[in-house]
Amino acid sequence: MDYKDYYKILGVAKDADTQAIKKAYRKLALKYHPDKNPDDKSAEDRFKEINEAYEVLGDPEKRAKYDQLGQSYHQWQRTGGQPGGFDWSQWVGGTPGGVRVEYGGSGDLFSEFFQTVFGGDPFGGGGRSGSMDFEDLLYGSRSQRSPRSRKRDLTTEVDITLEEAYHGTTRLISKEGRRLQVKIPSGARTGTRVRIAGEGRAGTGGDLYLDVVVKGDSRFERKEDDLYEDVTIDLYTAVLGGEAQIPTMTGKVTLKINAGTQPGQVIRVRGRGMPRLRKPDEYGDLYVRINIDIPKKLSAKERALFKELASLYRG
Image (tube, rainbow, N blue to C red; front, side, top):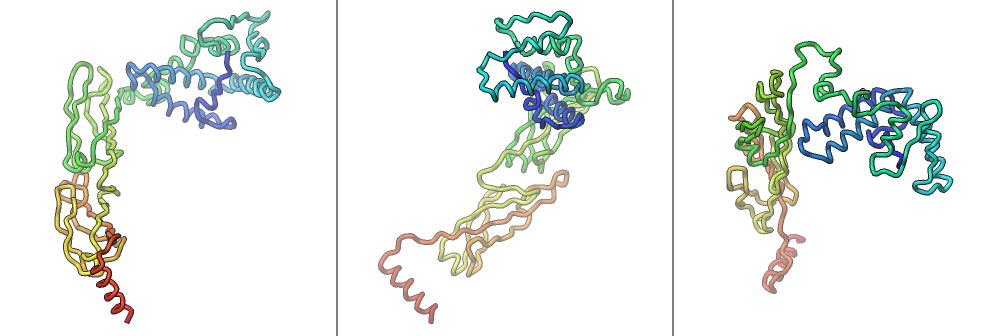
């Protein structure tokens, strides 16, 4: 039987107040709830562990008992205690006369300890968090909810590429044996939420929400509706001026390079950024950061010409 660090499971400090513990629990429970992770055994196990931790830390009396246990356990460790040698007997005698707990089985032994010391199964009828469903997590307990808030929305994430964000795209969502085609508008960015009315939990009048995540792109860096890219030009074009072909979201265009362009200089190309969400006729800008390719190998003639240029430059 092993000691479980409930504070670590919820990701809170040992001196966290009740509100901080509740906030951490709700965030994790929403993330790992079976309704959001169907057929994911690891998420289900994590959800149970989170509920078990909150069942204790969310109750001041149980938390006090658990803290006493923790102090005793850590003191035993500091004095050189060996795994499996901790004396649990003082903690499992929760009822008059003591309760015998066998430790040789393969089940969750810490949960046996939990049931003995704190009374009840955190995932059965006696536990507060065991009875909390997805609706409770989203809207609070039933006694706190108004009739209007009882609809049950569903939320899922969808990944799209930068190019799909530029042009707009669609995704097929499978729901209760049906396939829904959802349009994601041009200009979408990470955090954009697409609402499909009436497609929440069946029979509740809730909605389905798609939270968009735009994946990184090897060519462009996005900042709001503007794009940034690095373009390398040769030394001679930088010195004398000229033109360079640069990629954009709609293909290559010709960029004018002024004579004397410096390394790291940024050239703004208007209207070549991302479309503005819900304003498809408006676009951000493209910012081109110039890198200059300095020749590493020179022929004898090139070297002589550079020396001549250097002498002219230096007077």
